[in-house]
Amino acid sequence: MNIGTIICLTLAIFFILLSLIFTLLKEKAALLISGFNTISKEEREKYDKKKMSIDMRNSLFLWSIILLLGVASSYFINKYCSIIAIVIWLIVFLKDIHINSDKAFEKYKKS
Image (tube, rainbow, N blue to C red):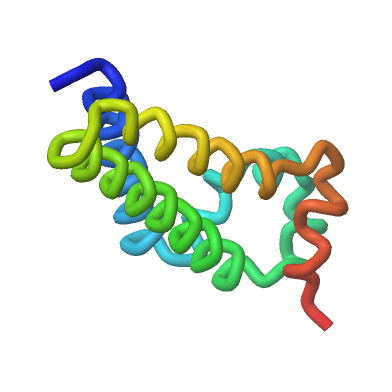
């Protein structure tokens, strides 16, 4: 097993565990989302925490699937497939990053 496969497997296990935490804690897990815990309690009530938690759980699960596919393909096909999986994961990960917390959570505002 090469280093890329080990990195993919480690990250995949980590993301699966995090997605399980979001599954078990449901809307309480919204506080684990970066930036949301810094918003005041009154402001947090304006957001749909259940939808935020579900979206984060789904993102974490998608990331773990991408990395597990990298593990399998690097083990069975070519050792460099894990690098491709990490690059794909980085693209998907960076797509969801927002600098401004208002912009990051605007789709979760309650009507």
